[in-house]
Length: 215
Image (tube, rainbow, N blue to C red; front, side, top):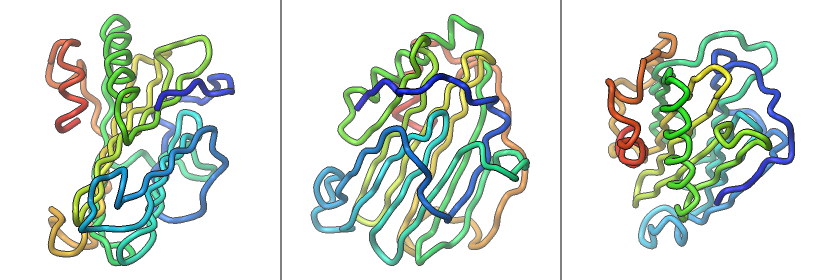
């Protein structure tokens, strides 16, 4: 699902994004509701709902299923000035939760190609939501969700064309014993890594593949 956001592109910088687990839903510009036992293709597994929310150049994901509810926010949050964490792994509401983020720095021609390939991927995806800001097709926020019998995971992209920076995140919630949680309750406090190019110098044409596998 691809939509044009009815707001101007005024969000600040990629470095201003912060991560938060918990809290309340914030006002959204676009929302997509998914059923885990239908749209996510897990008839014999998890049952509940997954909501993708666009807050401009920010996002929220709300899960209501399994052992407990969970809400993830990546946004410019008032009063939070710590860098977006490179990695988080902890237990929350009966789930094993993992989060990872990185920032890609791209030259303009690569950034535009990467943006268009990601938006093409999201537009045709049955469990995705993307919003493009008026006036710049490379200014967008996108989310793609995947669901399995005992695990829900999603990836997001936050584009900042004025900086040539693309913030990429990936998250997962797994039932205990099924997730790759390395150490329960451990939170990596390192700042987000910055890389030049897409993935170690991968050409722009590989962007669609990178969107589907790994980052």
